Image 1 (spheres, rainbow, N blue to C red):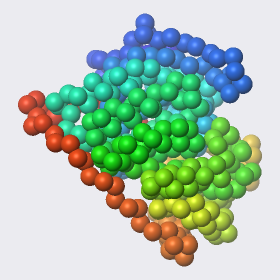
Image 2: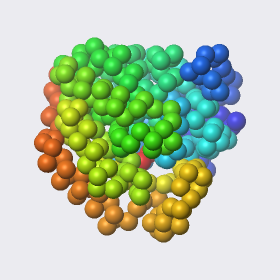
Image 3: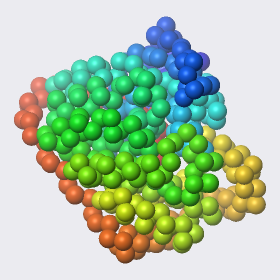
Length: 345
C-alpha cells in the first residue's frame, strides 16, 4: 500500500506532504463474528478537517471523516474510488480494508482550538459512514462530538447506522449551543433489495426507528432518500411506500437523490447488476451513457414524485437549529487552509 502517497492535495500529481507515513500504520484483525473478514489499518492522521473540492455540488466546505472504507458494503457507494489512492481494491477491499484515524478526536480538538479556524460548519458521514460497524469498537465519535460541542462548532451528520443513538446525550448537548443537523439515509424500504444492495447496513425500518427516536428527543432529523435506484426502487408504488414510511417516522424532511455511478463505484455496481439483474444492464448503459449521473429529465421526474408524496403525507420543512452561542476571537492569523478531501458526492 502506498500510504506515503496519500497527500494533502486532491491533485495526486502532487506528493509533497503525506497525510501519514507507512511507519504510522498498525494493522489488526478481530476474532469476532461482526468483524469476520475485516482488516483494520490504524493510522495517526496529520489532519482531520478536510476542505471539499471547489467543484463539488455539496453545500458545505469542510468535512471530518474518521474512517476510510466502509463495512456497510453498499454496492453503489461513490467513495469506493478513494481506496485506489492507497493501492487498495475498490470492490471487496473497500468493504473489508478499513482505515481508522485513531487520533481523530484529539486532532480535531487541536484544530478547532487554532485561531486560524473560523468555526465553519463541518459535515460528517459525507464520504463514508462515521457510524459504521467499526465505530462500535473504536469509539471515535464521542470524542469528536465532545470537541465540536465544547467549541460550539456547527456540524451535521449523515448516517445509515443505528449506533448514533449511543451518542444521543452529546447530540442534545451540542444542539443547546450550536446548529446540529442530522440526516438518516433510507433510499427504499424493499427488504429484498436492501439485503443485496446494502448487505452491511441496518435494515431500513431500523434506520427509521433512529429517526423516530431522535425526533422524540427533540432532535429534528431529515431523511436523505438515497439512492433511488433506476428500475429497482423507482416504481411509483415503491416511492409511495418509502415516503409513507419516512413520514410515519416523524422525519422533518425528505430529499431524494438518484443513483450516480462514478468510476470505482460504477464497475462494482455494474458487476453486481449483471449478476443479479442481467436484463437491466443494457438499460443502465443507455441511462448512464453520458456520465456518472442519470439524465436531468429522470432526476426531475423522481424529485417531483417524491416532493408530491411528501406533501401528501405531511412531511414539513426541516426546522432551523439553535444558533452558535460562543463569541469567536478575532483571528490573528490567515484563515486555516486544510487538506482537500479526496472525493465527495
